[in-house]
Length: 413
Image (cartoon, rainbow, N blue to C red; front, side):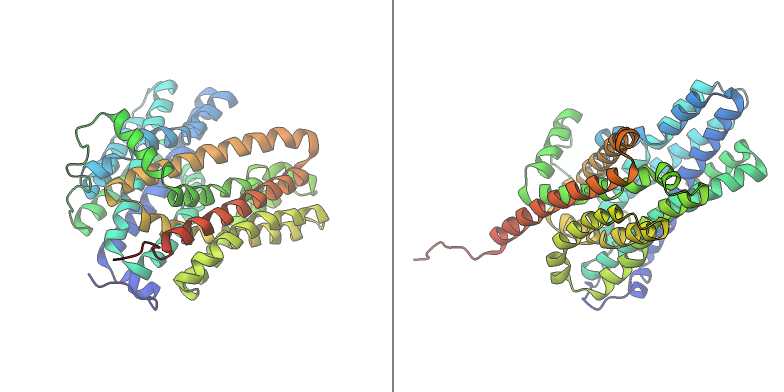
């Protein structure tokens, strides 16, 4: 495989057959996950008319991400990553198919959704871990941009398609469609990618799950550079706060459902526009140098909401924040370059688990604080705290980076 160059283009990325197969499978898997979540949520509400059970069903589409990331992501280091992705898709297709059977109790439906979602993290970790083997250099950077943009778009499109599909054909037929997406995804991966041997051959393959998990924690959180990059990635919990309290903010600004939707879409929209520009037009060295300042800006720009300029201005602010969040591409690339291949999948899983937990906690804190001080103040405080954290992490990254690249002071005889 030819190494990527600084002048790589998105056409170069899509010219790689294996990447096209992974990208296609990702679209189907993400949309399938959202489709299952929407369809089953509606099915539970239709049968129970209980907001509580419906909320539990919806939560079952998120909580398993943490469990799956912690317990299953390392599988793609111990076994061929292509096989892990195929097996995850087949299992999810089977579990979703079980949901379509008539007379399945509500508790079993929620459990099936829980298990289905739990196999998403090992699939995503395997996909993330195998991508650097398929794309090298700047092609990997552009490929990561495509993957991140596709994931954000897939969440929105999947939820929208889920609602439309259920409205036209009903929740059970929608679940059949969902099961089919996983089958097709498995076919793309199985016949569109090359089988590679396990990355962790001979490296603790037979050790216990707790031992492997401890080793994964040591790999990610024991290395100063990896820890700093992970923490820079987790800063999204601070500048994504507007999404967590979009509805109360829209109400506070005199808007309704449409305003809520615009607030929810503004940050991802800014990121989707900026990511290709940042990855394609900015050189690798500059991406690393700008990573810290952009992280500071993504959080600090949220302080502007205190100007109380109205809904339109706030939407622009959130879009700019999302655009500055393009620094995540540089953090992701630097993370991949530094994590050992034999631990790559588990490292991605641990990083994603922390991100999900952090965002969930921040959304809950923001929701509680909103009842007392209002959404605008909550967003501004979150942005301010995030900016301070980003400054500290930027200084830390510069120290770590300088130590790793400064010449040895050892005097040679």
